[in-house]
Image 1 (tube, one colour):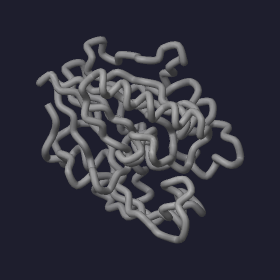
Image 2 (cartoon, rainbow, N blue to C red; image 1 turned 180 degrees about the horizontal axis):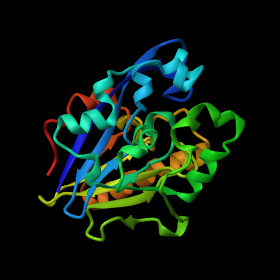
Image 3 (cartoon, rainbow, N blue to C red; image 1 turned 30 degrees about the vertical axis):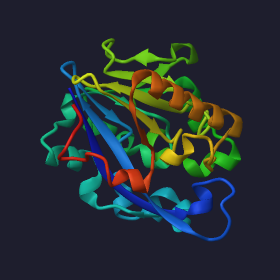
Image 4 (cartoon, helix red, strand yellow; image 1 turned 30 degrees about the horizontal axis):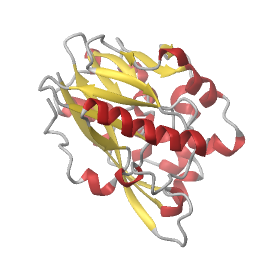
Length: 262
């Protein structure tokens, strides 16, 4: 069992859109990671980054948001060519696990037909919200990626919090709402006995973990701050290294493909 971190490109965006209350017009360039877990019972893709169309024309695929949040992505960074370049067959993917369904996390769903043996795991809360978001949140979803026939949805109920995908502690799914109503983060147990906690967008940058900074782009600030505290608590219990969702400073320190965690 191995955890692989893939580079899905980057997005240059106003810092006030990244961190609540930031004054001025400062900008930040944030990475777009996605993850693959090798497992004897079938591989797992977590999120899959951006849709391949974003590498060609992000404004055409995403709309107006792509004019202020400027994405840099090569075609080979899309989920399927990136997997194949590292020797992974999409047919070996048993699960596509969605932390949530925002535009920079639905790259695998955009090409779901390339994953013939996969089911898509997402919370029922996120699925419902993404299909009918409030007007203020609509920009965050690209319906073309997931509102279509043939998506093999498998919906997690709220009471299934702490869902252990394989039943062996390899991938445990924790509810961390706030960034979106059905957001999940993931506790990954490695064969070495070490643990990684993929906070995804519950924690954009590591310096949010102590509560001194509040992320922007939330559907509930109350839930978002509670989820940051929950990530901190769960990661401490597991003795896990926390990997933030889009931290440009941490990104430079991570083992990215061709390296891995095991």
